[in-house]
Amino acid sequence: MKEIILKIKNLFCGYDSQIILSDINLTVEKGKLLGIIGPNGSGKTTLLRVITGVIKAKKGNIFFEDKDINQIGIKELAKKIAVVPQTLAINSMTVEEFLFLGRIPHYKRFQFFETKKDQEIVQKALKLT
Image (tube, rainbow, N blue to C red; front, side, top):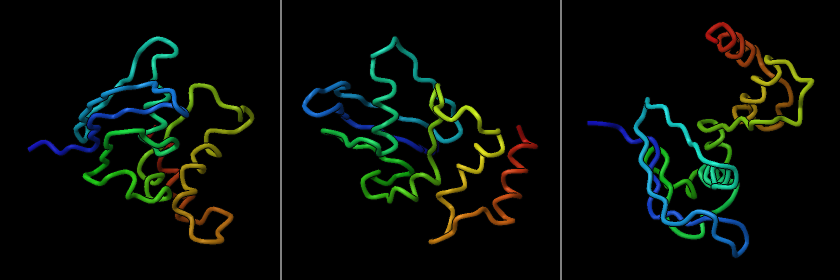
């Protein structure tokens, strides 16, 4: 049986009173790659923002690993989902420094610097890519 990692049902979302996306239904199987394509202004970024919890859906449901994303804490969601924007405001950052940003959701309370484990994970990611 195919495992569903992401399921979107009857999603309506947008900004303030303006609906950008309406009646979106989508199912993504674990291990599959998904591309979201479309012209500028078609709602690609809005869809990513609602999936990652940056904006709230006006109507409908989003399930990640069979859990409603509204029931998943932002830190827990950030451990599983990350979005890299097409253009970055931080252009003086090394690849290694950028990878360490992905470790932030794993930090313990009042942890301000990466641990040896974080360093090992980042080095492994660098070698894999």
